[in-house]
Image 1 (tube, rainbow, N blue to C red):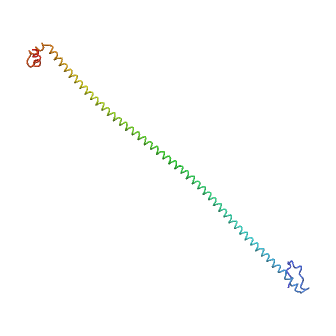
Image 2 (cartoon, rainbow, N blue to C red):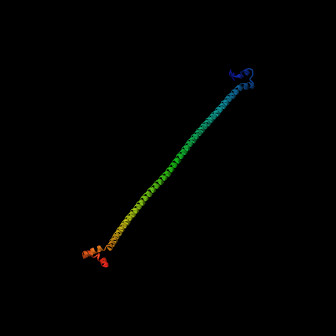
Length: 210
């Protein structure tokens, strides 16, 4: 075998083959190669470990990213739910306002109906009052007619009384004339001397007296 590499750390312990050709010297020559291999293996293992650690870190980062994403999603969902709640509240408030408005409208309608009923009642009362006035006017007309009839009857009675008075006066006049004729015989004589047609009425008292 040739001389070992000059940079090997075990070169100090190297024994030249000229001194001894024993088997131990050959072992000492091979030993640094083993150490180099073990070192390279250790480096490989270190690299593998580093790679594994990197993978683990990457996985952790990925997991963290996922967690962050999930958290953001959850936050977004929460925000959306809050918005929905607010919207629902607004809707409920609007519905309540609308209901209140509708109730107010309904109340106003009811009041208007009541007022219309009252107006209708008042109109009916007014019509009834007018009808009553008309009936009163008719009754007044009837009473006027009755009064007129009564006046006519009274007039007729007056005329009748006047006729009766007239008749009574006539009868009274006749009686007076008769009395006068009976009292004055000269009148009877004059009557008898007149023509028979004129004295016919006065003849019986003359004959009675003769």
